[in-house]
Image 1 (cartoon, rainbow, N blue to C red):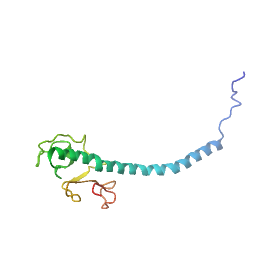
Image 2: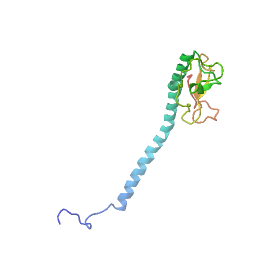
Image 3: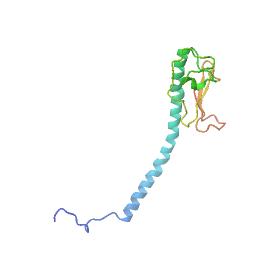
Image 4: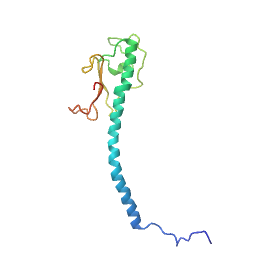
Length: 145
């Protein structure tokens, strides 16, 4: 029977070959995994910056264009989703300006203040970052820097 393999002639991998492959895979994993783990924090920071620098400001500017003023601190970013009933009541509210309540990548609400402390001409928007309970502000993502 030409062309057929005889099971007695075929050989599998030896234990040494299998161990060598496992060691190579483990070494590659040890080099690659730590680099990928740091990327998730970078991606979250980039997403928060995009929200703070583009997405939320765009909605706030549309609100201001329609009504002539930004939502107050008390009305907050919720004013972009539902017409506020507190003063000043927007007469030309044409929202919703956002699809959902804006949460930062860590699942916390973005902080909003109008007029802003750092930007008194309009508003401050920021995320307290990965560690919101920390007194350190170096991990905060802000719109005033």
